[in-house]
Image (tube, rainbow, N blue to C red; front, side, top):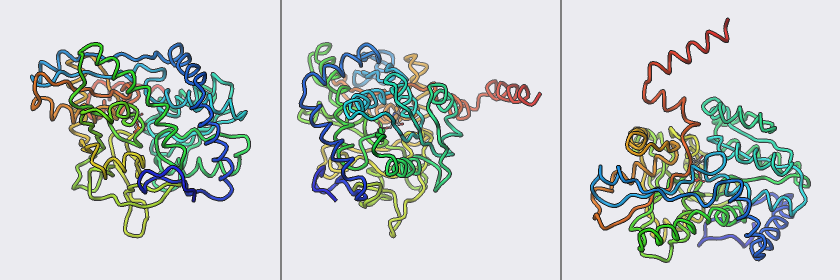
Length: 408
Ligand SMILES: Cc1ncc(COP(=O)(O)O)c(C=O)c1O
């Protein structure tokens, strides 16, 4: 265990001895790059020519009128290349891989967004790429698997454990231990051993830097509240970081799944079902039993379906700087339906958690107040899940016809 990367007791780097030198190399490369103004400029150049940065801040006029309270703005991370904030992180780590001279990248993925983003980065920078994905997620996110494979990545289906994100992370670490000389593990969120939480948050901080400038330019004042969904915590930290020292209320929204009382959820910071422990190389709140065995989690959004959470966010829960809430699958699908109809926006199911919580609170706020919702990704990938949730009969007929075509 190293004595670095602690956030008041959360975090750290609980590593097998064999990986210590690899982590040291990564940390050194990251710190050198962070202190090199040329590196950030190179990063911004790529993000603005390859990934549509700066992403806009959209005024949601119709939703604002509908709720009759705070003025609602939406930070459009869905407009990144590959449709989510994940691009911010993978391009940053890709530049570090080039600096380290490695030629192969591996990644875990839940919703598939991080996997697709990593596969595009690998294609662009000429790296070999392997993506680990739980069997359950492979089944519910097939379109993303299709694209990862077309982009040249090998997608390995993980059949261990509960066959979701945490199991994909375990497999990625197993691969890394065997291939660390040639391979970098592009961890997809602000979790895992140090320096990942700090490094991923650093690359995602571009969201909040832009949002702060954009709202000040447009409204000449800061928002009263900012909402972001919380899986591992990277999009939330990305937008929150620039407002930590301002009088702005920061609200992280987790997955309440079938309800916090049901036991079928993925709420680590807003439920009583999580406790502090060490797993996957770091210390944070995990959804685990008394023996430290990880329990099953559930969310309609694959990207929020994870047992742990960023140690940086765990610390902000303790200090009270960030308020944590949770939205149920049902509330999320309703918020998605409303956003589609009122604004013509298609948030990812993950992002729709932030929308759902903001919608619960918007009408109780003053018309003078501003709230910002971070739309971390776009919902195209969720078409199968959302069509099921809406019970769309024409979609079911389309799928049946397709299946018949394949049988013919
Ligand atoms: C669109 C989208 N939003 C949010 C998340 C959750 O990740 P994080 O909490 O790291 O932002 C994911 C994860 O896959 C995602 O795909």
